[in-house]
Length: 202
Image 1 (tube, rainbow, N blue to C red):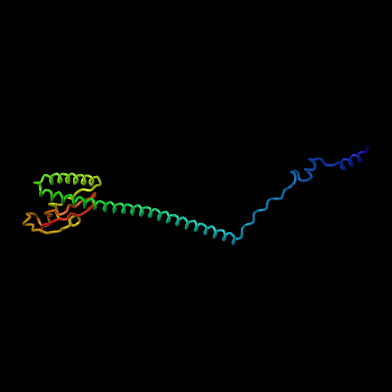
Image 2 (image 1 turned 180 degrees about the vertical axis):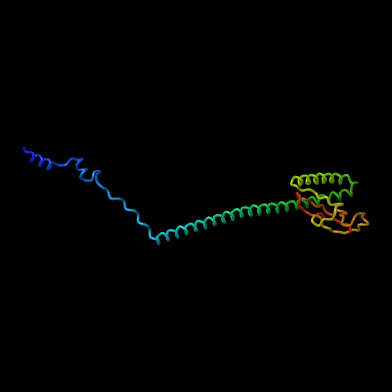
């Protein structure tokens, strides 16, 4: 075979993989470059911003409504508790007033009995009344109720109710002094449960 025929055969042989890669560019198939994202139109950007602002304002309104609702609930709880306390205090005072009425009757019975000491039967009844009177006072003290010290004190309209005025000179006291207690007054804690009905020097 001549040299000319060898060259022709070499040219007609298929290319190898490395030769094909070289022929096609060297690094395999060329992929197209990714296209850059298109910029949103200004109208779309403005719409999105307005929508975001609307959502933000709505969230703020909802938060404020929640805060107001929480404050209203707390105020209601305090009001309900205060009303309950006031109702209990009213019932307590009403019950104590009833007990004081019983105490008044006992004291009147004791005073009446002391005027008839010569009768032994009355003396026995009188002792029973005194025991009942002491028992009621002890029970009241457990509830914070105590008698008011009024005799000899300065007249205080917040604690005393004047039912009679007497001469200060005849009573031998300063004007405005409580001379005598007609009906005992009582305190519950530091509050006046019932004012004392008194005679006042004038």
